[in-house]
Image (cartoon, rainbow, N blue to C red):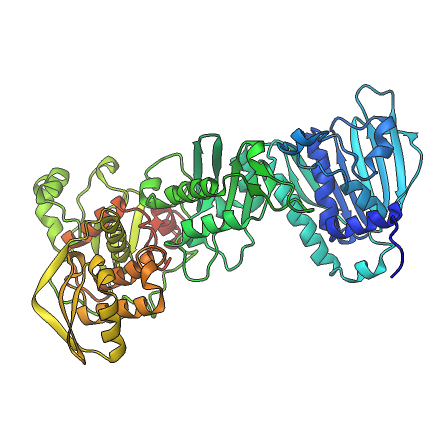
Amino acid sequence: MSAIKLLPDGLINQIAAGEVIERPASVLKELLENAIDAGATDIAVTIAQGGLKQIRVSDNGMGIPSDELSLALMRHATSKISNQVDLQKITSLGFRGEGLASIASVSYLQLVSQRSDAQHAWQIQAEGGQISQPEPASHPVGTTLEIRDLFFNLPARRKFLKTEATEFAHCEEVFRRMALSHAGIAFTLRHNGKLRSHWQAMACERRVREVLGEEFAQAATWVGERSAGIGLQGMLALPAYSRATRDMQYFFVNGRFVRDKLITHALREAYRDVLHLDRHPAFVLYLDVEPESVDVNVHPTKIEVRFRDGRAVHQFIYHGVSKALASPRSAIKAQPTVSPEPSSAVIRPDHQGHAGAGYLRQSNLPSNALAQPATFYQVLFGDEAHRQTEPGQPMPRESSANIPPLGFALGQLHGIYILAQNAQGLIIVDMHAAHERIVYETLKSKMDQQALPTQRLLIPVTFHADSLDIATVEENQAALQKLGLELTVLSATTLVVRAVPAILQHADIEKLVRDILNEIREGNPDQLLTARRNELLATMACHGAVRANRVMTITEMNELLRKMEATERSDQCNHGRPTWFEISLAELDKMFMRGK
């Protein structure tokens, strides 16, 4: 082994570049952060050949004094921090003082800058880390950094890069993140001489609309929460707008785009009850915290953070997002300040293979339905109230002020969907999916209140069971009782159910119990009512909801609509499928070419 010795500065910079500069997008990120930290209000980016040939960033910020140009390209030289106290409460995007030095060591770099109090601009150049002397130049107030032939002196690194199109896509994504996090700055992007994006300075919500598109904005709801020095705001796409990948997830902490496990977990938990299977939510969220309560000096790329009180941040994000998602969309739609909902043609409910298939023969809704008193309809319709108790009767003409958000039922379609009329047009409801969510939320509420009422069965349900079912019942009596089930072993091969949750008294008791026993075996019984409680309650809710092909009266349909309007998260069933869509009169007119 050779003797220990100090490495030359050039090699040190190239090693640092391996951590900071992964690809052209990493270079663009560093340059944009510097421009933003310099107070720029207008930033222009020019890219050639995906960033391999050229990356040029011009800003109208404060500029760099001529005697500091050389320092700007040296390692651990920065204007952002100066002592330990500054490091503990970082307010800038950059602070390490190694970004430009790393870039300069693996490219041809030119830096031109003009201060407002200087007579003219100055420029400096670097080639593979070799820095020239500053020279006079012509340039408006601000700074331009141009990077050419990235990794020209590291051919091995260059070979690992992807195609021009792929590298530009990464650059464009970095550009998009910066534009989303700093809406008050104008951004322009050109690639190979063509204008790709141009956004003027604007309000945050409008920037989100312009960057992510009107379809996202119309499918999103606004979240705004603040408490004890921490704030969360932004736009959350409703679950029906979910994605197959995580390509539309933007989370910023004090203006810095981050990917953090704690934040990701909080968001996943908030969406758990409303997201379909393996779909991913879409969102743009901004978290504001005190600088001293978050450590951004965790990773060279500065994309990870660490919170002083991670649990408090997790709970704040979780409850803020849950609250925004919990409001039924029907209630949101009643507020005139919210954007119109997406067209019903975007997503069509798919009932194939859903647990709702089957029949329910009782003549009334299960006891958990919210029954509307007859006087409710009398008040709205007067003497015509009796006409709303049977299918086929037209809805009375009333002012829109008297019509609830989900309107009043007109009838059923193929025993699966409820058709209703509101002030805007036609409402289509998947009755099983909607009722399943109502039952689920009721079960959760009662469980939280430790007040899950039970119903003793007049005739106990007895069925054959295998030895595994018998053992599961004997070992988990406490958990079963908390779920409102009185289940005992009658013999070595027989189980008897004597009581069930009152809300599920009309369900298929045998199938319900078998599914619950299976859920218990798959999880830790001690954690059943905590970590896995909701999954189990979702299974129970599915058994308690009205089934497809169930004939309902107009009154029962209206009961379901009113309950949907009052139930949290009623826009999706427990599996994340949408429960209802609206087709406006304008859309219907367009379908039938009215007015043409």
